[in-house]
Length: 520
Image (cartoon, rainbow, N blue to C red; front, top):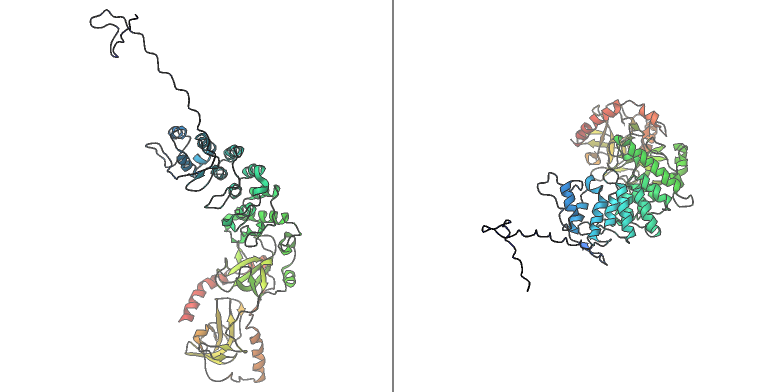
């Protein structure tokens, strides 16, 4: 019968107080459990609930930094959940986006399906990878590494985020990552190359890249067969969604240059057999403005309509310094424009602020004169009575004179009466800022809105000179529809910039005061 040896207590020494017993052998360390196998990957994707991003205790920053030892420990901890890792990916900081491949691999290690979605953004890992390729914030190399692995595992390039309606190719084009575009098109070129996005007027990836001035993405898409003649829901090809260089401030000269280069690249890629108007192609730069107007059947000063519904008066046609091609300068009826006739320090025509706009000559068309208060050769005063040229009128109920002009003007929107006062109490001689609307002695001319003009007496009185007076009034009637202007039909930027800046300064100071006078 075998006798068992008693095990000494944990705190005992080699000998007891009574002495005599031998020391017990040391205990063997417990065996290390084998590493648990990685969880099996799910067969179907799911949407993970939203969760906050984990941060170390007493952490000095508000964002997650995978390069920090404490953050790294959280990242590699198996207890960190997939929703928490998706929350880390949402942080748009270089520390996170440069480590997108490390974070993505940790998500996959936890058994996540390759097409699982973040519950807050509805984006997949492939969406986040394409977003992380943005230059400056992200790292294209890390984004390509993660995308390559996701595609090898069966990631779907055509999946869209429900919030932005964009797929992976749209994200890569939006953030200008040509390396990712090549990777995605190698995996699913025919299926996604011409896929559209409703948030960009149902435009393709080429439209998205062009609207964001992504020159590298546009070149890459064209190399892989993107169609530059495809149109979005507004009927625009990719070249027509490029931002207008004329709308860019002077401190964005680099962006304006990129826009010009991008538009030329897209127009050159369009087959000549497509239906894009040839007047938008760059080989029309050397045609003089008056020749272009003759081909279009237009003249300076005529009423035109811009594609989109805006109407105004044609003031300029020709080439410009801000973009290639033929451009039309239009003075809008209302302050809905973008400039006062000058762009980038070069003046092409003169108009009030926010009433000037430039458009390609292919986007303008001739319109009939707008309906006015004129009827049967006469005009209507504030009470609806007919006023003919030369009729006696009262301005503001107290200042008598003769009606000489009715129509739109360059100095203010709307319709105006031009009145020759009986006494020298006016503001001018019928000309304002170099534009003559009628003729009268100095300080006898005044403009007033129809609400301030009332007809008095009978018809037009006979002025001294009899028949000569009628001859004098005949050219005045012709100036009602279009005032005479004392500058060439097609004014070049060099001609206009040579004008004195004193008139522009006078306009800025005098125009508000004149409006207050008319209101009073």
